Image (tube, rainbow over all chains, first blue to last red; front, side, top):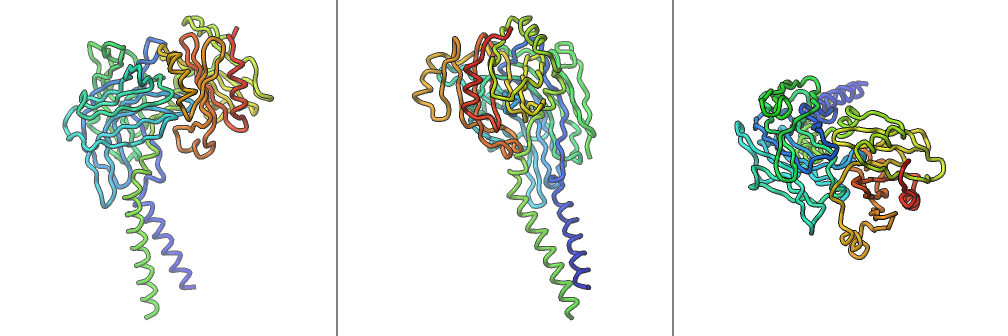
Length: 228
Length: 200
C-alpha cells in the first residue's frame, strides 16, 4: 500500500516535471504580422523586408522566429522562408540566428541555419526572389543584407502563390516587445515596390501596431508586442 | 531504513528522468522546430470564398483566363466546392466521393493560379529522358508533368497519406496543380489529366 502511494507521488512529480520542462509539447503557434494583399491577380516573384533584431527572453523549449515567406502551394503546404530565430533549453541558449526554409516536392528543408546571426538592436534586410534562370527554372534565391548570407533553392511547384511577413512563437509566454518590420516589398521583375495592401493578423496575447507612412499607408511597416 | 532507501531511490529516479528529459530536449530542438511553418491554410481560408462553377468561370474570364477542368472523373467523385481568393488569384477546386470540402483532405483537388513563366517545351521534353521522379504527357496543346510520389509539406498529412501522385499542367497563363489522394491512384490521375478541357 505504501509502495503504491510512493509510486503515485512519483508519477505526479514526474508529470509536473515534464510539464515544467517542456511546455512546447502542449503548445499552439502564435502569429503576428501581415498577409500580402495585392491589386494584381498574379503573385509577385519575390518578397523583401527589413526586420529589427530583438533578443527576447525565450523560455526553455519554445522558439520564436521573425520571417518573410513566399507561399508556393496552399493545397500542399509548400513555402520558402527566411528570417532569424531564437531558441532555448535549460542547458543551452541560442542567440539570434539566421535561418531559411525551402519546402516543396523536391525536399523538406526546414530551419536550416546560417553560421551567423544578427545582433540585438540592428536592422537587417531579408529577401526571397525568383532566380529567373533559363538553365534552372525552378530556382529561388534567399538572401540576407543583399548577399553576405545567401542560399539557392530549387523548388517545385516553383510559381509563387502569395507572400507573408510574420513573427511566430511557439508559446504565448514569449515576449515579442520591440518587434518591428519595415519596407515590406514585392518584386515586380525590375524593382521592389512597397506593399500597397495587406491583411493583418495578431493572435492573442499578441498585438500589432500598423505604422502609417506617406509612401505605403499602413501596408509596409508594423510593430508587434505582447506575450508573457 | 528500507523506508528511506525507497525514498532515495524514487528521488534519484526522478532526478535521472528530469535530467534525461532535458538532454533529450537539447538534442530534440531541431525536431521541435520541425513544426514551425507559416499559417498557410488559415491564410487562404480567411481570404477565400466559396463560389459556384458558373461564377468561377465568369470570374476567370473577367481576368482574361479560360479555365481547363476535368471532363471526366473516376467513379463516385463529384465537385464538392470551389474556393476563390483574390489577390493574388488562387482558386482550389475540390472533388470528393465522400462530400469532403476541406481541400487538405479531399481525394482530388486542383489548385489554380496564374503563372506567366511556364517551363519551356524543350525543358519539358527532356524530362522524359533525364528525370527520375517525374514524366511528361501531352495534354491538348501543351504538356502535363506527372510526379508519381509527392509528399505534403506538413508533418500531419505526410504521416496520414505518405507519397501520392501529383500533376502540374499549364495552359493559357494558368498553372494547375492536380493531386489525388487514396483511394485514387496514379492511373486515376492520368485519366483526369487527359480529360482536361475548356470549361464552359
